[in-house]
Image (cartoon, rainbow, N blue to C red; front, side):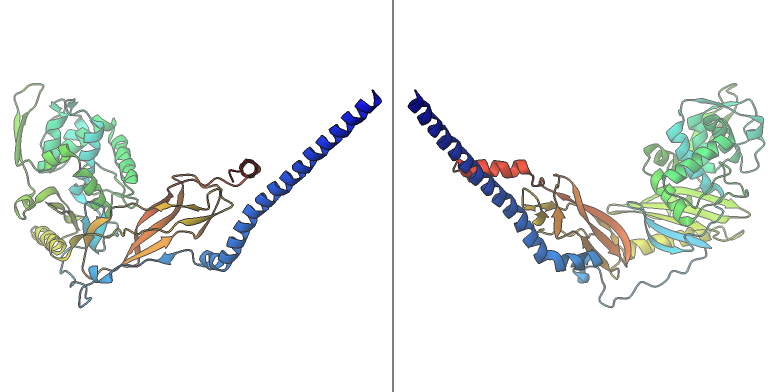
Length: 433
């Protein structure tokens, strides 16, 4: 009995010793694999250390771009335009890039070009089939008037044609009171819309543009507002209508016919608007728009003469539009590149693929210079998720930032952990490593 127990104990000790030996060997293997994985990353990191420090000092690298595509042979900018306006601006209506300006960021009174915002706010917040009742206050507005009378009723749709075709001031107030509750309430809506469009140098006090303290805009802001407005099909339908007839609803005894006072619609091919204006303080003003197969141009002239020089606004507008048509071409400046895999420190996957996609078609002059800068790190630190933003590409036009395109990871790389190393050990012992 004693001999049997002695043999059993001896076998047990041998078995336990073997288990402990292989456990120790497994631990050493596990530790070696874990250290090897981390040390390999440290080694690579050391190799990149100098480069990484330089990158941190100057994280943006200039990209390559064929300058011949955007520079003219003589590298001369087109001649300055001779304009009569105190403030003038030409804008690319597809991306709101300013193509030409003279005092384009100066705060100016804008007269009835105000009604562009009045119209678009009404279209977005009102019901065109609503019936508007004229208040005594609206009926007292000075010229230009439709001469509506207190208590009369009109469809909101009809009043918008009166507003935009003949610029009636009494109608503007009637619309504002109906849509905004009060004139003050409506101008708050106008200002809110201006902020939404990032027009921060604009403030509306009236819905009709009559001279008032604190009522101003800039040619740039007015162009942005107009660029937004002409994307509304109802706005375009109204402002491009040659003439329109309607009746007062309550009694039905008064009928009206309004005709479009925007002569620019017949001055240039592709003209699609937008609005005239005049007050004693603002002078003659006009916002124009031209649509061509490859472009939309918005022009603004403010303070463009006083009586009797009412035609100078057309002259300046045509000069701006002609400048935009003759000197700019639609070009694609997005640069497609094959990106090398990016190393991931302490990642279960050593590298990730990056993806850059974009479409940057815009109007360019031949002398304008394009610079592309890549802000993409050489080393990333795990974890990195698929679709994670890891960098950006910046496009500059004449040293001014035009667009920034994000760079995304195409795959993931989780951080190395003990579970990952343990699974590598299991594969080692199962002859799968």
